[in-house]
Image: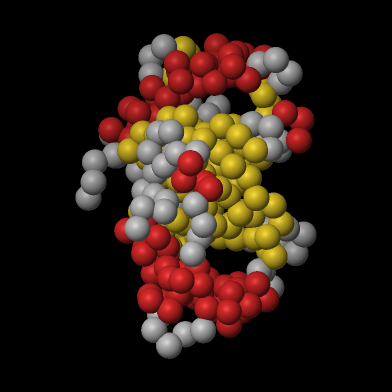
Length: 233
């Protein structure tokens, strides 16, 4: 997936949100319907907010495999509503592009909807292979149990493909998907669920193991403003 981090210019957040829904969302809907991408997500930062938020908005293009060559500018035509030059000018007057990142899903379960809340943990790990294996073998079944119990909607573990290198601070992340604000307050119940999902395993040992494998650099909360999804396969 290609993730664009956007910072709204002072006083322009509402206008930028409206502009994306009015133009870019329609272009992305056309691309999803043509099978050029799997889905598209437009999300807004809830916490942190204001100057402290690195990304006021996220634009996420989801592909089945490696994405095609980037469109330059971001879209050829915004659903026939606004030509490229006009869109660029309007976007530049309301926002700035902070970063473009390419991420790969490692494992996931559940789903999200428009209105869902995304709790994003940016993670540093010095033992990526062990961390990734633990996500799939240990944590995915636990999160599937949490989804069945109605604790939350979905979960995703992913790694960054580009940019990369020794100075890249967070090579991995996890995303927990919650249906509403109230769901965020529900306890995770890991000590209760781990022995049920993994009989014979000690929850304290598992929690200690994951703590030794990762450092959570920051946690951010986003709300899904718009979600465009292709037909189920």
